[in-house]
Structures are given as structure tokens and as C-alpha cells.
Length: 126
Image (cartoon, rainbow, N blue to C red; front, side, top):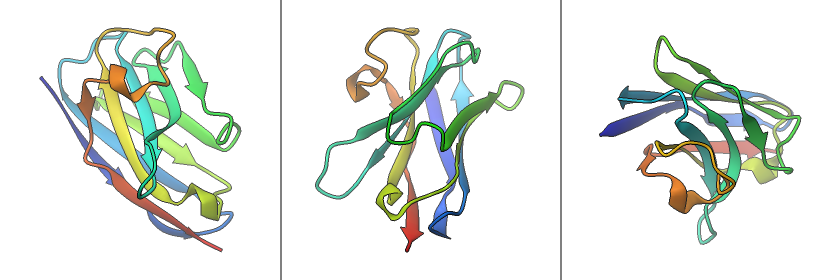
């Protein structure tokens, strides 16, 4: 079993930065995948980025590429989503997720992730 607890987020002005943390408890393997997603009310959960727990592979959605950075601290069993140059359209609830099955071509699909954090609100004001 894996539990994910998110922290961070909040309210920021456009152009600002925020960092989300995702603390994992349980057994995370080096080839496990941590994904980040976001969701607005009434919309589908949208892929933001993903990384293997080893950090060897990182992928980002086109909408955030160059503005978001995914990292992790293996010693703390924690993943991070650093978001810079935030825009009002980045306002969403952000979720971290873990897929223990290893990297695949389906890394953008929310259905492949078995465990989810509780979500954190990010609001970007104009």
C-alpha cells in the first residue's frame, strides 16, 4: 500500500511561483512513476507531468513545458512540482499519483495510476 499526502499550493499572482509536495509512505520502487495531474470543476483530470522515481525519465504536458519542473527527494520519499510563470489558466486542483507498474507509453493516462494524493488547490489571480 502507498499513501500520498500533498502540501503546498495556494494563491499566487500571475507570473509567480508555487511548489507542491507529495510525501509518499509505503514501498516506492525506483521504476515506479510519479505523475502530476490537475482538474478544474466539471472537467477531466489533465496530465501535467510525470517522472520515474529514479528521475531517469521526465515528461511534461505541452501546456506547462518550460514552466514546471518535477523532482523528488528519495531520502524523504517526497516528490515535488515546481511551477513558475504561473497563469490564471493554471488555476486548478493539483493531484499527485503513483503507478508502481513502471514506465510505459501510457504515462499521461490517469487510469494507470493506482494511488492518489488528496489534491491541493492552486489559484492564480490576474
